[in-house]
Length: 234
Length: 215
Image (tube, rainbow over all chains, first blue to last red; front, side):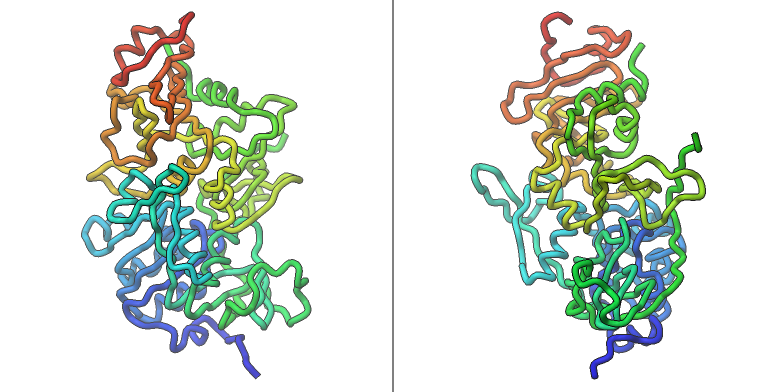
């Protein structure tokens, strides 16, 4: 019987990592990142990675870990401002960045997972983002052609999952995870709660298990908060 | 004399309408949520995947899984929904958000906007700004009128653009400007900031503009 459940992040990535591969990593800032899988990729020593992720972590946390080990050659992101080491490697020329508008990035990943090689969007027309790309008019308005993205490996985080790989996300930790789960040639998920089939309500499942090849139970992620903002009690 | 940041936010809040779905950018635009008129219902969208954004949590009630696009901890409301980044930008790019209020480095008299990149400096990225200005039907910019004494309302932007022909209304510390972004009708000064004068605006503006009757 097929078994998707692996005992830990290192074993779940066995055979899936190669130098110079394209890796997608879920999360927005440090919210909803697959931290155990990121650490396992870092420890594997794989290098020359192109990493598709909205952000690049912060120093020492999330994808910041893989910057310290200089495993990332290129980032495909919409915003990378939170990371001193990133700035240094970028300014030193050790790291290249392809900036994508956040919605274009999300749609490129969604399209890649859905077998759509390219699509037109208004976003970025007349800006640096459109340079070198086809622009076509529809109904009198210009649109720029953007490509779908497929990754060699996608790593995602979910709140709950079952052994079949069905996933449920929690609050804004959903972000890029559902699209990335669909856009990896292989997809590995880490979940805070791993349950048996039948324990998730089928109507509530956000990522059907067909997209998930391997799954690990990571019960207590560190869940850092980047900007802790509060209001006084009345 | 000029408007304070909070007065600029209060002026921007006058652009809200009952039932609007609104995206607020980082900085002064965030302050707009403090000025939503009583009795008006406005749903705030946060592009990381939330509609119906509530206020900051009480201390001790922060949830790392519940943040806004500025990565700040926020709270839910009874109307809140959560969704993926693809769904979030489908509602932005599909024109379903009524109003986007955001900051800027430069605005040009044709409605061009630059707010993401200064060549030669470390570039952080455009985040969702290009999607918002391309997809949201009405775009309001709130910014200081000048930067280090230099005009920011220009004939043409000199910084890399975020979008072309996208700004409908510009609110600065000195006044309010309507921009005919598609029709080519240019810029019209329609309101003066507190204590600001026409002379002061003329001295600190590079763009051509007309002055509305009565000012």
